[in-house]
Length: 273
Image (cartoon, rainbow, N blue to C red; front, side):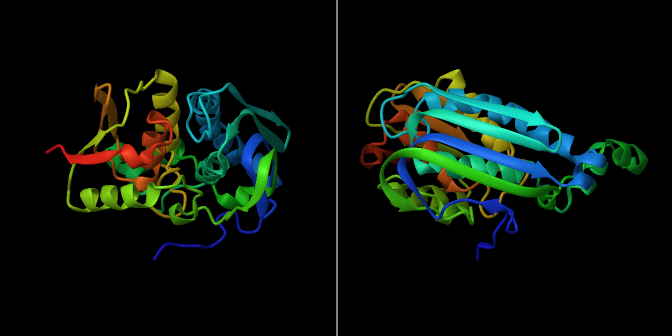
């Protein structure tokens, strides 16, 4: 059973209904004084810097977009105990907002065994691991507000932020089930037949993997970090290969939707082993 608790523990303030096509996303957050004084605020900002820098290119490439790729900008700014993220352009699907909020939660999250993993990487040297360890906690956010502008009818937005609550494109459920079944069967290589020729641009690939490596697509609450190291490539212009995928099928479906312009009905998952 997935955890449906509020990952921000009541610190996130956002309207329960948002426009179905987003033109801007503004997030303002404040750290606790303890997080600032103990250096955890800088650790969280460091974790956010690279992924946020890729969001403009990712969304401009059509990821979480309603229409043909259109320019999108994303910027992170910080002053004292507060920071802001502004995303503008589109139109973007509400899934874009879902990804950004998952990113914020993941940046302030570490797996329960994160320190033990670091000790293992340092060949058992606990003293060195203690010096290098940078803890961070979701409670380091004292408050966070999110406002959006956009077009179209208002739609419900579930900020519990687990994969099954993500706003999805039509037709995604069947493909997600197929991917989940293939991964559970131990398939290490997934081959997707696309309905049209596609281009996996560096901006799309870098932005997608930036979210993946921080646990945005984890199967459950935001994971903070992903141990998986998947590989993405186009075997032919109409064949996407994904290897070693260990997260929720949601992320791959969103990537495939980008490559085929949202036409998931024409996508087929083939046995590539």
